Image (cartoon, rainbow, N blue to C red):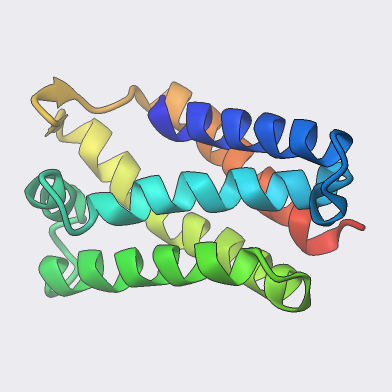
Length: 147
């Protein structure tokens, strides 16, 4: 749930800052870019921090080198977060991130089916995780196609 909170809070704060006169954040499109970037910094850093082992365990067993896949997806999330901020790269970054989120979704399905834990708690149930993933992908697509 923390990624959703980061997305919503980041977008709302950015929108308020835009309304207060910061031209670069004046509008929902730039606010969504900031919210999505904040969410990706949160999720991307988890690939290298205390939850790394849990994320490696989430990778479907049929895939090779889960440690490398977690590192690669973390780098892509963090790089994508940075690329969302400048308007010149935001659309391409958002489109790529939408594809990345879709590519990573099987790990969430695998984790739910195998009843794994994340930070000592059960992973988000599959129905909830699917709804969250749809919201995240829809946000990325709104950034890619908007404005």
